[in-house]
Structures are given as C-alpha cells and as structure tokens.
Length: 136
Image (cartoon, rainbow, N blue to C red):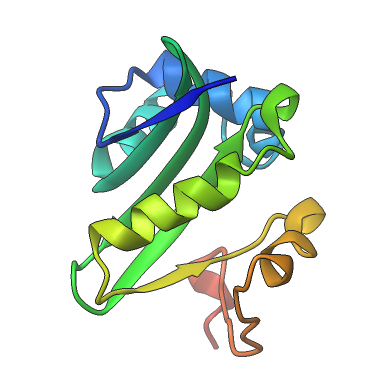
C-alpha cells in the first residue's frame, strides 16, 4: 500500500463527510446538517489529505494563524487504513506546513491513548462551553 499526501487538496463536502464517517468521527459531528458541514469545510485553512491512489483514506483539517497556533479540528483515518502510520504522517505534514505554530487538538474519546504514544504532550488546562448561557 502506497499512501500519498496532498496539502490543501480540493475536497467536496461529500468527500469530507465520507472520510469522517469511515473514521468514526462522524459520530461526533453534525452530519445531518450538510450546510454546517460545508461551513466547517470552507472555514478551515489547513488541510492534508492521505490518498490510496485517488481514494481519500485520511484527512487532517484545522485552523491556523500561521505562527502561534494550529488547532487541529479533525484527524480522520478510514478504519480500514488505521494502524499503518497514516495519522502520524498527517500530523507531521500539518506541523511542517507551519512549523512555528504549536499543534493543538482535542482527542476523541477513543483516541486519548493514541496521542501520548506518538509523542504529543497532554495539557490539563483545556476549557470549553457549548452555549453562551453557560457563561456566568
């Protein structure tokens, strides 16, 4: 299996949704709202695709300021292609695109053990809200 990687490939919303489904990330994304998925695709500014021939088998999608922070919103690898180093290569490619920027992500529950194994540091100071009404 020879996997090629493309920075900022041209992706359709269907391609995006399909790789999320095949990786299980679709379970935690608003997949029923195609307009929202299109906005997610349109408003990120960092993409790296992993391809087996013409088939998209992995995707890293994120947002960066090019200097300080790159937030990786999705690291999706087709379940049939996992455990072959594709996720690690996608992370390396994203980091190399903007080497000064710190690469940050929130792990999916099933992936929490993966990231420390490949050298990422855990940070205990992440905070989030889902709704503005939560701010007191």
